[in-house]
Image (cartoon, rainbow, N blue to C red; front, side, top):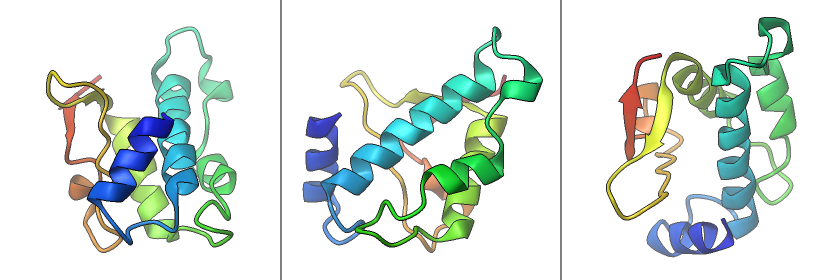
Length: 113
């Protein structure tokens, strides 16, 4: 995950404040995917959108990421199972803050549940 965060920041300078933000957000998205799609997790125990947003408060160098951006990430994760794109391994494209939700995770292959 640390290598991923470092590479993402090198490839996308200025998108996030630092590698720690990318690391935490990528990990948070993986935890969200597990919470929403693992069959053994009961519906009442699944992470809510409000919990996801709260979990990611202050991760961008002490600042909050835009709420609409985090909501878009949640919505994509809720409606689709995200898989890393390509044979090279895990690479998450967070997209820009200005992007529409369909662009937020553009490097993922999307499979409807």
